[in-house]
Image 1: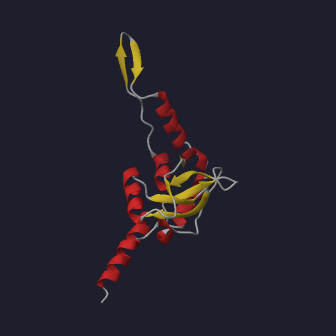
Image 2: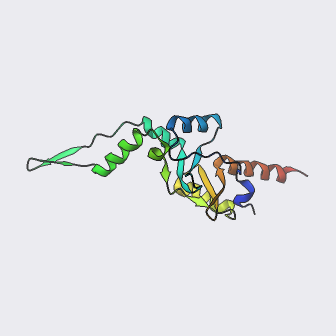
Image 3: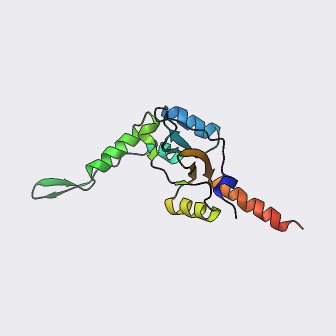
Length: 157
């Protein structure tokens, strides 16, 4: 049975929280990857920045709807939600747009567990941690490669 260590990319491109958003976007595009682990200067995982996080910056800010009761305007959107959206849309540094506390797996995670996590959490890049150290990343493409290599093995005489 395939494990995370068998399919992960070990040579991981990372950024730090102070990396400029445009630099992170360029790394994603130039390397044809979906996500970058965000590592601090001590090598600790702080989050992940993905294409979806950067696309959020192009999103229109939802204007809160109001309704009136007894001459008082009551917003339907919570102020914290609006503040979070404004913060992501106006991000200049990775720390402002990254997803903190990303979903991670260990090197011994099974292919089935990896696929389940990706589907359940709607993510395209999983970070592989060996205890507290970054060991690799797994993208959906890595899983698709296992399907095609398994199919090739099965069709050979």
